Length: 184
Image 1 (cartoon, rainbow, N blue to C red):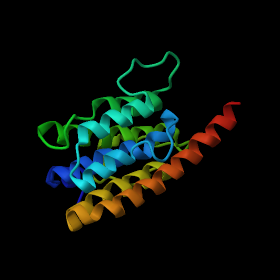
Image 2: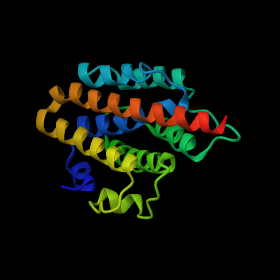
Image 3: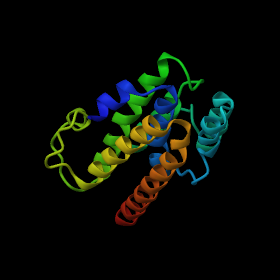
């Protein structure tokens, strides 16, 4: 099943976890530590107040602020994911946010991957994976894995989704670090 189909079939918890996982994997671009989004993960697990947890995450990561002059596109995309997060982990806006996070996260990985990938991100999400760059391919697999974990295990799938996200965050942190060394 394609990523687009998985998002279309996901329930609210799956959508919230999917969008959150995409954002979580890109947190290194905002200079956030590994715990910055932990309150949001906790709110999904405990059915706690998503809005309050989102406020904490935004405060920790500098969300809902103006874009900084000189920010590169990958940072802007990540900041927009955080700023666009809905105030509740329910409702119609959640599907739109999860879908937007999916596209943005794949685009971030595409921007950071030195390998050429001339195919659109939308095509990748629909299942056309031939010639995909390694970083984008790994992100696509992670997005699918998160949605499948939540679809198959419900709330119990959150731990696995967080583990998938943590692995991706470590990979992206290494890419960002290598990129910074190359510029400096």
